Each structure stands twice: as structure tokens, then as C-alpha cells.
Amino acid sequence: MIVRSASAHYSGLGKDGKGSVSTQSGVLDGQQYGFNTRFADGKGTNPEELIAAAHASCFTMALSFALAKAGFAEGELDTTAKISLEQEGEGFRVTKSALTLTAAVPGIDEAAFGPIADGAKANCPISKLLNAEVTLDWTLG
Image 1 (cartoon, rainbow, N blue to C red):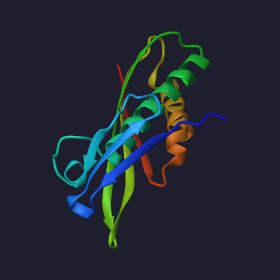
Image 2: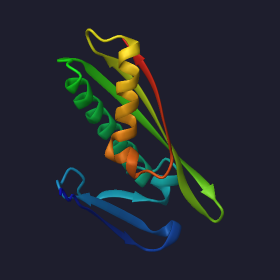
Image 3: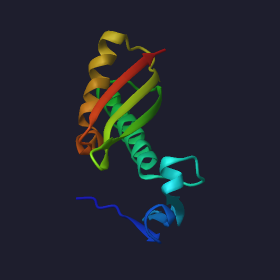
């Protein structure tokens, strides 16, 4: 089993509070977050942006491995994930992660690519983690 960690600190409460988030690897080290970075255009990050980064990178890596397993040796994959946060009652919920992929894989056609991409979408660990709709639009070039 692999275990990774991150930590968050929040000082103050509600809209007036300010937080920081750090990751085990140190790639995030005291990165600022708070109300303004989540619900406005404040400088810093937010949980949904971090989920989007995790989902885009997880799916792209899963697809890379699935294509290699299918016998393809090279290619370029570019994925964007857009996380939707919607109000639900008095709180909020992540309702969707929309993946958009542009792929260039020599020797593959759309009929072969589609099922491999759909399998990667369904089986990447972050897709499995999300209790939300996960969609995939792709372009093969």
C-alpha cells in the first residue's frame, strides 16, 4: 500500500480566515488558500483546483499506461480537468469532473482509442474516488 499525505492549517474562521496547504513531497509548501481563492479570484489555490490537478494527472498517467499495454510506444497526451462545485442545501458539493483530452498517438485510430480512453477514465484511482459525474471529451490528432 502506498500512503501520501498533505496538511492544511487555517487561522481565523469563516470568510476572514486564511489557510495554507502543504504536501509531503514539498511541492506545495505553505501554499495560501481561503475564501477569496475558492470563491473569488484571490491569489493562491483551493481544494477544487487541487482535485482538478490530481484528476488530470491521474487520468493522463492511467491512459499512458493503458496505451503502452495495448502496444503503443509513443505519444503525447494533454488533459484538462474542470471541477464543478455547486451549492447543495446550505453547503457545497463537487458535482462533476469534466476531462478534456488532446492526444497524438501514432498508429492508433479512433475506434481503438475510444475504449482505451474510456477505460482509463473509469479506472484511474481519482475517478474511482470522486462521488461525482466524470465525463471525457477527447480529440485524437
